[in-house]
Amino acid sequence: MTQPRFLGRTAPGAPTLGAFTTGQLVRLCDVAGLDASDAELYARVLAEALGPVADRPLDLPPPSDSFLSDDHTPVEFSLAFQPDAPPTLRVLVEPGAGAGSLAESGRTGLRFLRAMARRWDFATDRLDELEDLFFPPSPQGAFALWCALELRPGGVPKVKVYLNPAASGQERSAETVREALRRLGHRQAFTALPQADRHLFFALDLGDWEEPRVKVYLAHQDLSAAEAGGLSRTGGGPGQAEIQAFFRAAAGYDADLGIGDGEADGHDVRLGRRPVQSCHAFTETASGLPSGFTLYVPVRDYVRHDGDALERAVAVLRRQGVDAAPLAAALAAVTSRRPQDGTGLIAYLALADQRGKPPRVTAYISSEAYRVRPPAVLLPAGAVSGSVHRERMESALTVD
Image (cartoon, rainbow, N blue to C red; front, top):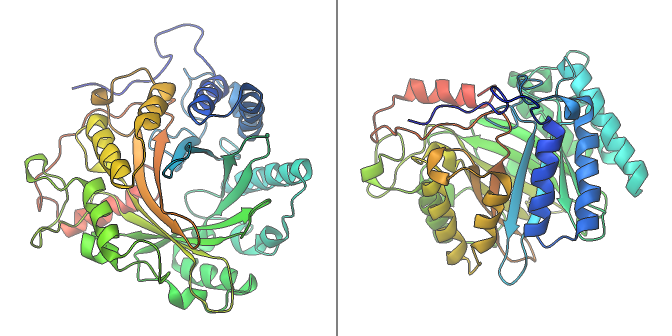
């Protein structure tokens, strides 16, 4: 079995975190059709977001136990695919990685966001309205603030901020989400959310968006395809059958591989190793209903290796009428290893719908700056107890 790889452990002159991740970003920009000047600018922005840890050699441990990725790299990439269009590249970063405390991490993240707002002339008033909710004096939880940049031609990205509903305690996360929605004018939105095991993230679009969204992310433990099909509250977009088909394709229901923990129900299997996530996006306040829905399957926990994950991603993309070649090119832009030599390079596959736009498929790609997870030995379906499921969910939502 391939052992975990820690880059630079045995080689002198190890690269830095910033050089490693910005190099990946520049190569991904080429895959996404962005020109060299845009790639250079966005690489500088990523290095600025990382701050002092950008200069940290990779032969040292990660700067903090970042919940953003399994190996604690505070950077993740994603490509969003739609038919007849180049993929859209995004980078997710934790600006306060290595800050020393959650409180300082949050302050660092806010400073970075406000600096970007001055640079690109966008308002942060909606975020300012929520500061006391998500940045208490003694914050709790797995993270304070993440920032996502959707990279566009011209060097001005779309900006998203992700906040932690558990900042004042996990037991208050639902109350925090409800109050945040109320302050932003979405007074009926909380009641439109489906049942879930946990409120994971609260997110805002900042800057140049046609319809800025407020988004709530939920965790669903032991979810089945049938249940996944009933999570959307948009009243449009992909129907239950399409969502279920995506769920099954991404999860790879295959008895020979032992994929899916829990008991099978006919052709349905519940996913229990890591929770499935849903996102509910709100753009208008009158109806109280979301205008967008996304389902995220953590494919890395239900494959033997990334070769399996890539096969599933290709099948999902082809079902949506999308050319899968850019995804293979993106993996090659991030790493030189073979997909069969590890698991986790493709972290999630997602099916998203936003009212008025065609559905899109997103593949989330890990940087693997510090570690490659070895290929997995999957357990037979039904071999993991419910209590172990819950323990694994707790682990997945704190530090993995």
